[in-house]
Length: 217
Image (cartoon, rainbow, N blue to C red; front, side, top):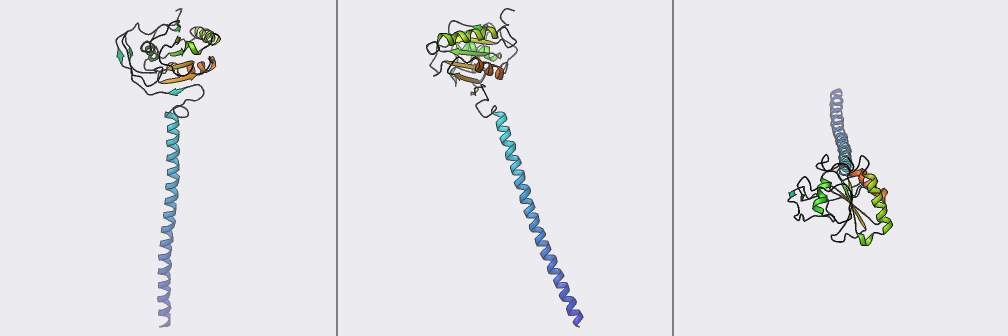
């Protein structure tokens, strides 16, 4: 009889141990699951951050170096030559309604008279950049430096560049450099900054293969 009581106690002890093992095993599984979920959440968050950096242009809405600031896309609708476009979200405009005919993009190079945004947008649509300056805010030496740089640039493979006076609303700086959907304000005639902007955005436009031919060709 004593042996049977001992056997029963042993069986109950083994059952208790097995139940405890199951509970402990279940707890370890939950802990492991939470660790895996935490790791997955960290990986997802990291991926989202990298994606945002990539989408919004090398550090958010502001590009790296002299790449300028990304602007709202106002579309690329066509209007008759000589008519007014807009409204535009930036000053000067970097996208939006513009003159449509084949002869409306301006020749690349230096202009003495202020050009219309609706015309210059057609040049930007074809991958060029426009350097606008406010005559009252830019000294003679600064203007001469920009003119020399633009004339030299039109002899290179990145020839789609225009320098023009600005006759619209004051944009608060002596110089504005525009490409399709991008804008860089400058407080002095910094040709290195203009070149950096050109390198970042040259040809990055809806119709980069079009536009006037290279000057002198």
